[in-house]
Length: 525
Image (cartoon, rainbow, N blue to C red):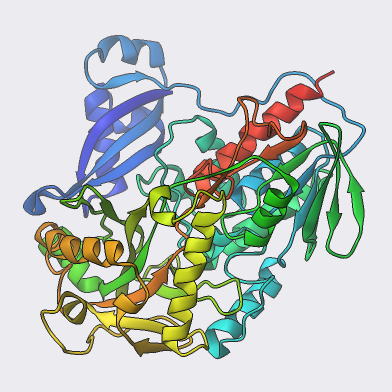
């Protein structure tokens, strides 16, 4: 096929118009265009009176060689082969690999191992998507937390109950494999080409279930409510794992894809002497605005023709501390994301349509090991817990989230927030200074007006801040070598966001694929 880049189309342009542009650029008729596939579509909104889409297309024509020879210098070339290349040969091991955790990292590690014929066993402490949905709904409606089956733990990991954002900064070709597997599992096809792909929580639940079913059909095993409480080692070699119910499973390979909220597992690893280190992360709040305000600020009068707008803002304070928006959810909701009794954590989510009244985003402040107050490897985790406990107490001790208007927080107005908070089960007005340390509130107070200069209305006084956003990334890194193996024991593979090696659904999934490839090469025959 032929790849064509930099084809521009108005926001209300049609597929027919796109075909005509492609044919004209190639010097052929529309009838000679045998096939057209969108490889990438991005929105250029830098000039509000000239907003347009920019396309990269792959097209098939009758005489490809002839067309290419005439099209030199026209952003036209041979389409590269981006299909995933499985490792050559076969592998065989006498003990099935065990995958601990069924978030993106564990899921794609298990999928690749199953596709390679290594029949993995997946152990997930939480439940399948159906039981998980019931437990989460009960928490959001009544404040009754299930500490093993919640927004953090269960099939698909924390990402299942967010927005299903698939943007990533990594350029690894395995990213395409991740997206293609999701489309095969009934994710929307546009995730293959949108510059900012997302699935939505409502659709993602079905996607992760179908991927699990594929793993099982290929010889893998997925067990829910199977919490790992110990890793068995002899000498320097992994020998198995122990479950909470006392069951032992023998294996020489444990992929540790535990997620950033498996705090009790981090404590178990530290107790056993697994090599851990402190890691910078970020914490803060969720900020909510009317989605229509964000749409107009980003697109002007063209907003009515476009999907709900997003934004990404960064700022460095005068003291050199970074503050940024993260996991922005157009038309979304702020959700209760706690996983421990007596500690309150929040997150954001959107459904596929992104049709809620509010936009929300995390507003995060960088937190460095020097801020933790101790050199203990888990001190960043304890720092998170302390702030979550303060938020829980300020909310009244029943997972009611404390909120404050931007005006009240900045000291420019004492009015209550007019933007209706979306957090469930309940919210309560409070003073965020009672939760967040001074270095964080100082940074946020400097940042919000500056971000308002870049995105009109961001600093509006009636916007609402909800606390506390504490689970943006792992505060711990589980050390590993170049082959993905922990130096603590041969056969232990820390993977994904919880281990400190990824920053989102796609990058965690790619990390899982890489480790699965390493295990394949280990047992290649």
